[in-house]
Length: 470
Ligand SMILES: [Zn+2]
Image 1 (cartoon, rainbow, N blue to C red):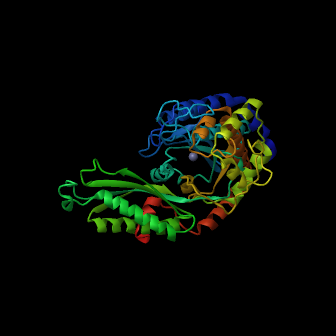
Image 2: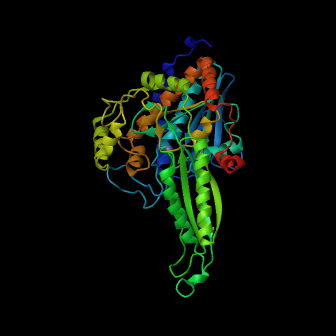
């Protein structure tokens, strides 16, 4: 298509003129946080919003809070991934000191109230631009539940999403700085190990009992010894979800919930095999039985440098920089000062020299190529199905980690909203470029094929429980 037919700057105007209703939606979702798979209101609001703006919404499988919204015809099909789930126990008001809105209630500690709506704003702006100029191209918004438990997108692929003809996927995530990422987020598996023993009077007849809690403890000891012989980037973390009912009853049932992470799916399969052996060993030692419930997991992300280039140009040269008011800077400083000592400096040490130290107003060129981020995202599943790229946008001050009360406070403030709008402009500009020049999409596909080396996608649960993982 002829690039000159479409005025790219019109996208920025469209976003600036329409941002208020999207910002209100992001704050509405922030004010009513919902946990993974329970995002009924957030998904309903988003579907309604998109239908009203001419998108066709479809839903697949047995996932009431997942959906896909589409507009356009022909041309490349570009998908934007959105999320909207919150985190347990993270309730917080817009305040620079700990102040839950409701004790123990959920809160948007990962800024997903912004993440989803930022994607919505991007697809709506792109739709306006394409419609105004009669340009061929299709834009999709994927409403993705349950990112916080890292199984939403894997479940969506099982329901038929993503394997539905989308050419490339783009997404963003709230962060303390703005840049495209070429780092790899780790592959991850979530599983519950349920041990079953024999109950007995702990004082009167201990010899008759077989403690399921002993098995859990021995499994954890074994897993902690395993740490010495893992790949440096492997991670194991667990919580005991059932440790028995009373000290004077030998626990007949006990359960421990593990997350295991590894740089790539192959290393994860190896770590998983060894963890299963540790569990079976604990059962053998304690004469208990173990039942393993593999809850799912996600793939490591796969960078796509072709798409990264497009996102970076749009982040640094089209969408940014952001300007902050004095009041916003004061709030940011209070938030930053509430962090544990050294946290801001540790964050700064990972940033390029000369970076801004309070708020990252000027987006940075990509600086994390080759690094592993010791966290996971189910975006990894999509990244193993199609070329995918992600951009960070600054929604809180430098040093603020996700899953903190400070992140919740900022995600409900104008700092968060400014990051969301920056992300929306970046994504919309990138979609414009991809639709204008389908050759970029072809090159992104070639890079993806080279990185996947002919492997076909299977959900991580299937991969790990298959014979080749045993
Ligand atoms: Zn997140």
